[in-house]
Amino acid sequence: MDQRVNISVEGESEPVSTGDLTCALYASAENIPRTAWFSVVQSEDWPMHPDVLHLQERTLADQARFWFGIVNNQHGEPQACAAFALFATDVVQASPQLVKAAIAPLRRLWPNTLNSKILFCGLPIPDGGNHLRIHPSAHSAGVLRCIDATMLNLARSTGAPIMVIKEFTDDEASQLHGLEDLGYLRGNIPPMHQFTQPFKSFDAYRDALRSNYRRQLDASITKFEALDATVSHYTEPHAIRRKFTDDVHGLYLNVLAHSAHRLEILPAAFFRELPRTIPNDVVLTLVEHRGKPLAFAFGIHRNHTFSNLYVGCDYAMNSKADLYFNVFHLSMSAAFKRGASHMKLGATSDDFKARLGCSQSNACAYARATGPRTNKMFRAFSGLLFPPVTQIAPRRVFRETPRS
Image (cartoon, one colour):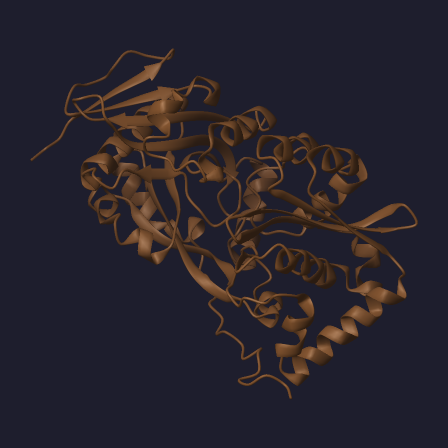
């Protein structure tokens, strides 16, 4: 049965149709009705907390536009919640170098070639999650039609030719077949690296490594210790705000400049304010030498899960002290002490993170163009948006039996 959708945009436009489901959009996370929102979203679900959403909205206001939706049934009962963002994006930024080289002459003449507005269901925080929550009792196919109609309305009103719903694990994607029926193309995106080996301490982790990996670790630590740097772990919001200086933010920009996947550039204000938004869950690991910051890791520890969201590094000192390598170990050490049994360590540096003992968790996204004609062309060139993703086999990092 065809299910039409009523889309009402709070403060932006009148409803465009009628039907069993209504998606109310809010132009600011400040306006989200929290009782309705938390009837779908779990209170510990920090990426979907309205305060975290509002922080992204405020700190990225110069780069993106945001909306927040609640899908209700005909009885006014919330069925789903979603967060949307409009970004101007370089479509080929993650494509192979051969593709970029082919585009380069065109961009010398027309700098905005294949730079496009993209409307996302999903916000930037890179914890390997998505920003779509569907109530267990809801009819998911109907909700997905509602989300699609909502995004189509927004995309057309803002001139975005492409819509993307991201990012999902294989298990989550098994509930989203309705998107492909709506014309979305499913594509793989860089996988999240998961660490699921529980250790009580970093020493226990080191002891469990096979000898060759333990030698690599010890050699890296020896180089780092020769630097005689200071390592500090901060969890108190005021301390993180004070220590996250503009120089520390510059280390984040260093790493971002080396990344093939850049959607947003987070200002220092985001890092300084997030700890106050979710107090005592943010952990800042900071490496300093004679008062100068050299590296940091910035993550969230909640419910025995540690998500390492961002790292920063002084590349001029990296080869001397293996800073990038060591800041991961230092943040993992702090997470072990806090009782983490599951760590999310990001979606880049595949070989390096495999050597840490991580496994890859497949991730995918769904994309379509806003019109049937352009959607055919979009499918023909979908490899630009979804370039091939390299999967690497897990390494046998740990011993099968403890050392005697």
